[in-house]
Amino acid sequence: MLIIDCHAHIYSEDEKQYPPIENPYRPPPGKGTLAHLHREMTGAGVSYATAIQTSTFYKWDNRFTVAASKVNRAWLAGVCTLDPDDPHSPGLLEQYVREANVRGLRSIPAASGKLADPGVLTLWRTAQKLGIVVNVLVNRDKRGELAELLEKHRGLRVVLDHCLNIAAGEQLEATLADVVALAEHPNLYAKLTFVPTGSAQEYPCRDLHDACHVVIEAFGADRCVWGSDFPCELWCPKVTYRQHLKLFTDELGLDPAAKAAILGQTARRLWFADREEK
Image (cartoon, rainbow, N blue to C red):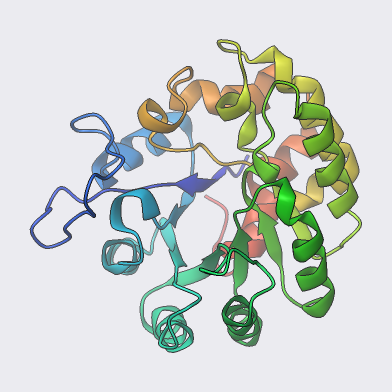
């Protein structure tokens, strides 16, 4: 079965060439490197991964993500995060896509606090022109603005990172309802990374199994993807990389067709349509 990791954050070992921001959110020593990611993928039978720009370490400096995606294009594709308030960002996006194996844009609200901001709209239009995917990272307060943008860009494929950050607790049902409501937009896909990050329990994180099934039912497995939250030691330390994957291969009780779609085939269409199955 083809398996693609749609959510890995990577960190360079060379902090002189790729300096972090002040007070970065840092993984444990030796974790989060390209070599570490490739070992985890190989050990778990994962063929490809998308490298999501690590904004908590590099902010808008995409140079490491871009360089890593270009050099390791046999198994990695880049997803950059660009400042919607910087007029140079659309041009950078075009350059990265054209030259460096960047296949996605991570979108966040502008400095105005709005997702439906002119700078964000310009980047979405550029992404649609380039034929790449937008990964949108927002909380439930942006549901209305996200729906507005999805309607304006019906030809653009958009992935909802972490599904509005679904988490166990008093906001679970409300957040889940917002995610389900957004599923009516056929160009929106759900990234099912929230099970261990949002769980209040240890592996196998059973308190969010039902929520995950609800999201899959709302979107359909062919509009859902899996991602590891690599490095798990930093982003979801209650599970290992293999356990994160095992949640979807074993613990959730998915049928074979749903597994194939969520773990690989949907992601292949989004980011790796030019690749053969390994």
